[in-house]
Image 1 (tube, rainbow, N blue to C red):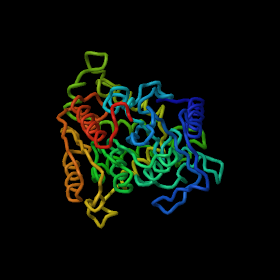
Image 2 (cartoon, helix red, strand yellow):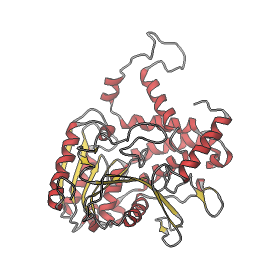
Image 3 (cartoon, rainbow, N blue to C red):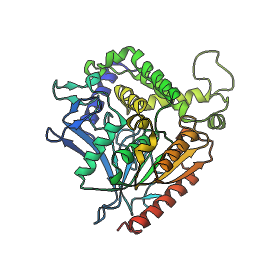
Image 4 (cartoon, rainbow, N blue to C red):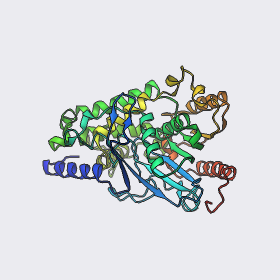
Length: 398
């Protein structure tokens, strides 16, 4: 957390290298394939970094697109090249797992506006030769999905067997189903909503203000000036992480236990285990994430509102769709509570869609979708197995 100027410069070099030359496959679209954004900006060139797992079958019918959440990236089921940690959804994806890489061809792309190789505020602006910073246009969930569609086209896939994601990833799933219904056979939006609540927008604004209050942020020019607003980003991560958990989960894991001591120090050190845990979450997060990216992705979530594009009626987004849906929520998720998921189900029903719904009983909070939750794994497996049978995908992926 206490970076020296030399450490900050080294961090900047590492971030720039990963933003422009990611340690994963990537495709770069030039002026022949510009991306039209909701803001009215025409973005070109556009680079998209991604990972794939498994094999695309001869019919090209077994592709599963994984949409990552706010702090995720394309390294969904492999060792992360920056942190050395295992993939963020390895509980769900892999050989013999619910999203079986011996059966499905799994794709996960770093979203537009992110910092792990897809074009975003940490990328180089070709017009200036410098980092975009806050000159990068504000993007939306729909813009992210448009960019993903460009990647899917590049991979030669007409129709996705399934699109799966939780939280911000779930928003992308819903947008995929709304924007490209003919290209999505099955959709699994998990722990998400058709729009951000006022409370969630408020939490996001607190995080953005924490980043912008860091003197090293330099009005978004920190990569150009060789600084790193790590303190502000760490605080933003700490605040957000609290919303991913539940009171019961925090109590079970930490309670009021002291950290490596039996009595208070009567100081502002991390006396309690929960304080030490949050500080650790903040300090490790800044090693792999870009501060401006945090601003852009939280703003994209704030702007997401499916009804706004459909005369104020969410059901209009799914009218006549042939996509089959499975909507999943968690009892202890207060960031995207079950009523948000029920609203999705009601809209799908009103639009005449085929939809199933499951509320998983757990005290693990919003982050339950990332954890080893047996009921979640069983639901995903069952839904995809039935969809695969209807799609004509056998156990070997053919």
